[in-house]
Structure formats: C-alpha cells, structure tokens
Image (cartoon, rainbow, N blue to C red):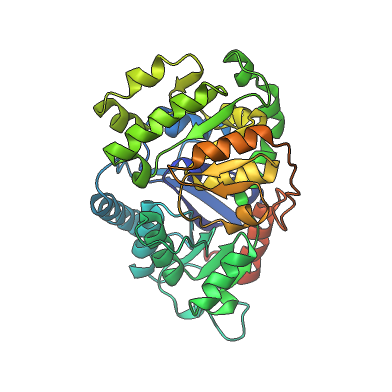
Length: 394
C-alpha cells in the first residue's frame, strides 16, 4: 500500500497550491494523495470551478464546514477533521497557506494519538528533529511557511504563527521566510526552501490561460485596463472605508477602465451599503462575479496594473512583471516590494499611485530564485528525504 497523504484545501488560493503537488504525488508509486476539502469556501465560483480548471478530481473527503466567525469556523474544522483523522489515518498531513482551516487542521493533527502505520518512518536528520519513530500521530508539513506581515490584527498572521509553531516540516517560498522562522527560534533543520507553489499552477496552465480572451470579451485591450480585487476585513468591513474605496474606484475608472471581480464577502458589504448599484452604473467599471482561475489569470496577464489586498496576486503580478498596488500597510511577501513591482499604499494616496503607474513605463527584473514552476517536484523530493523510500505496513 502507498503512503497516505492528506492535502488540506479550504479557500480559493489553497486550490492553486495543492493542485501541482497533487499531480506530482499522483505520479509516485509510493504516494496516495487524498484531497481534503474543509468547505470553508463553498460558493461554486470560489471552489468547484477551480477544481475543474486545475485538473483536480472531486475531493476525497469533504468536511462541509461552511462559513461562520473565526472561532466557529476553526472549531468546526477541528471537530470534523479529528473524526477524519481517526477514520482515515494519514501518514502525512500537508497544510497550505494561512486560512483558518490551515491552522485548525494542524492543531487537530498534532493533537491526535494513534500509532503510525509507516514501518520505516525515520527522519534523515541525525539530531532527530521529527523524532518520527516515537510519533503516534501523522507528521504535519506546512507549505508556504514563514511568511509574516508582523501585524497580529490580521487573522491570517495568527494562523501562520500557530501553524509554523506546531508543524514538523516547514517548506518556505523565499529567503525572508527562512529568516523569520530562524528569528522565532525554529530549528533550522525543520526548514526547507522549496519556492513558490503558486507559480507551478500558473506555469502548468499557461497555455490555457493564454488561449483565453476574457479582456476582449469585456471590450478591453491588453495593457489598457486595471484589475481590482478586495476582500480584507480592514478594507471592506468598515462602512466609511468601503464607501471611500468605491468612490475612488469610480474616479479611477474615468481615467482607465477597471475590472472588479467581487468576492462574496465584499459583495455582501457593498450591497448592505447600497454601493453595488452605484458601481454597476459606471461606464468604465466592469463588475463581475468571482472568476475561475484560468479566466482570472488571463485578465491578470493582460492588465496594465492590479489593485489588490490579496497575497497571491502580489506574487503573480511580480512574477509576470506587472505593477501592483497593495492596499495594505504591510505585506507578508516583501520580496514583491524589493523587486519593485509591488507598492504598499493607503486609501488616501493610492489614486496618486495609479496616476504614477499610468504615466510610467518602468520595466522590472522579476526573476526570483525557485519561483520557476518546479516547487512541487522539490516538495516531493523533500518528502522522500524525510521518509526513506516510504512504505506502509500491509
């Protein structure tokens, strides 16, 4: 029998992170990758369509958690996943990103107690960092470990800190992530830099992305429009800020067309404030439902700039050399700032940044070490190094 590996997925960015890894592990005779969908995002456009785009099968296990407060969602995931752990007994649990399910599944897995089924589950580290032979629970690995915004008002930052403290293996995307973990006192032998798994998905689907003409279907031209995504509570939950943001988008759209696929939580806030009807009347502001990965990336490939508070879009635009304005006071992806593609901005100055971008033709050197579409292969190699020729007891 194969080594049983749970790939935890919960929200839209998670799907892009598990897809390349699922495909890579499926080719290994020793691996049995199983997709565990917690149901944190249950909207069709936010979930099922992404599985189709990424060539993923239906989830092997679906927790069906749904929405709720942070505590409710995390608690429900822990309770539901604990049952799955006892019934399904994985050898390795891989969590990705920084959503509530990432933290909740990590907590459930490290607190479970059952004897591992691996006959030779031994760490290659002579110091015995994993102490695998003595574990009576699955080993937990965090993909995209070590990212820090240093802002604990962000729920995602708490999820990152808890997950990285508890996980046995920490796969990082960039040198700053390594440095963050070391500064926090993490044993260096737990840390392995593997690169950015999001770029694997982008390269895996590049030809499909480039075949689309979503911008043309919307009456737009390459390099002649801006792409907007907003969903952070700090931007959309405050009525005054949300109203000012929408007014600013209306003004910007008079200078350059904007495409705004609206996240479900953002749409709900805007509808409650009566802002949706205002934006939908604007001539140069295209409001849409969430867009599946391939079509969204076609818009990204061809936009003049992005305005976002998302983490993933900061990375993708940097990789593509496209200017990005991040409407936040901080970012857990400082490499995007250092490369010059991404700028942090505030509500009271991002219109000035837009004007600057529209009048500038600066190009950027966007080569980043290990952001090359081969991160999944490095993760598979890492698993092999931790588990010498994994083989389960019959």
